[in-house]
Length: 358
Ligand code: PLP
Image (cartoon, rainbow, N blue to C red):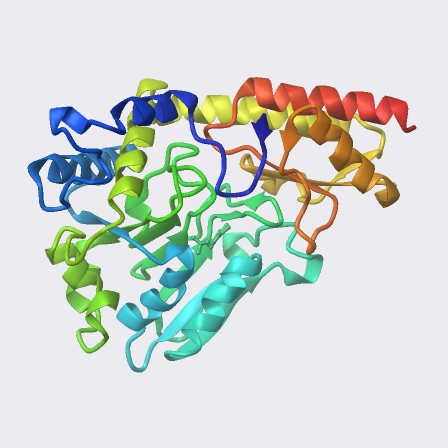
């Protein structure tokens, strides 16, 4: 099966095999990794290794902490303003898709928001460039969504402004290419696309934000408390963190982020080429310069063929490619763990489907 679902999505086979082999007896404890205490040395080693690996892969130094929390990326939509939207300041948002909009709407519950940029005028098929951003008078932060899962667009450069904390929802493209993480004050991502299983959300936060964060909100919402307790204030999602750590090890074994980027570029290219060379039979949604290497969105010129396309694809083991209703058509989600073989199978199918339905 080639799993093109937008998330949860495919996990590297070697990771699943390792998890299977360790499931009943983790590190000779005589217990499953699901059963060991989150206060045990074995689990502390897992969570410490995951934090260290993530910081290395994002090019971060000791000025940052990594938190492993629950509630999905969606919980961060409210946690960020609760912690960081202070009196007299405005939360700035770039609205480049549905999740960005949801994040902004949630911040509205806690203070003043400002839309710094938007791509709504063209059904979010592009990313506004930095010179099109217009920030509010006194910004608490600027929030962007680096990859728009539904629309298939991705920032190629990040709009960072001096002294304004840049916050990024990287749920659907974290660790897909090398970045200088130090441009960001806070990065968050639900794990279920590029990092492993659902159930854990990672937050990478610069230490100065922990100091200024709001101390009058509920304990479970406080970044500083979670950091002081190494994400072990309460019981964390231990199995998800364990699997996430294995996925980070897998990235290292692939040759690190540069190798992952090469792999992702070449996977995306063959699908975009199939779209571009189809004489309009397939049409890409995103403007080419903002195309995502993670979610390839396209429609069929004749949308009456959509159902047939999906049904025949599934007979070839290609699943999860139905597009989101906001764009229609198809979406192939090709996160880090999707293989070249999977993308080639999709391309072969697209070519034969076109030939048979011209
Ligand atoms: N942000 C982005 C960019 C996403 O793609 C998603 C889910 O697909 C979310 C946020 C919501 O994530 P979660 O389901 O972990 O709350």
